[in-house]
Length: 326
Image (cartoon, rainbow, N blue to C red; front, side, top):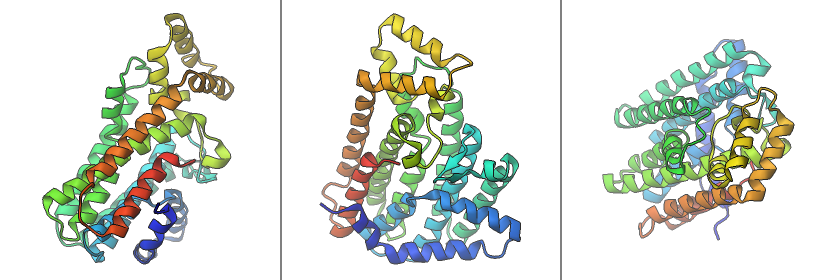
């Protein structure tokens, strides 16, 4: 089995070049601005989107300058989304550090995220063509629509699993799908091949968001390195909650919703609710759905005759997504 560490080693040179480009693009800003954005970019963690882009590039050919510039741009977009998410969720911890909105304030966070978005546009412009620019713009639009859509689902506890999948298809999935697709595209892959990699990233994104929602419930802050149970505290329906409510007896369902919607619903009450979700099997069902999407992601590349090491690495990254702890 190809280990996820091997996947990262395979593209170490590309990742190093990308990170150097990212640093250079932020080197000419005001000292305070530089402090804020340098602090912010540590939050992107696993660099999953550049990893997908570079591995897709390796699987279909060779990496080049357009891969590097696009990977850095996508990582800036992702980091901006994390900063904005923390403000929306009222989160105080990210990657074991204070979030930007806590270290400084929400105004600084909003502007730092906006600055990273404009830096992403500058990097994409260096590619000198519109296809990648348009694909990333579309992914950003879908992500914003997905986040807005989730805000509209607060207290919508009658949501079905299919409605949930449709919602998360506009959150984490678009940037991951765009990363894998553009990795193939910039290596000269044809449209059919690029679409296979887009589908891989899309399915991976669905699984990633389900696991993220599960970890938000059952994870430990020290392990996750971020504020947890924000979805439950903010009354956003996620897959474990949806499965629990659909299986619960009428009286239990009513009592659960009454507790979640009370003004004094706090961390201790949320922890007790999580215990119920686990005992009922709802969390296990959600994990199984994530596994199903990962299997579909891997299946989208089945039979593709590309670089075997890169394809094995993509599979290992996909498996890592459903087994991660943060």
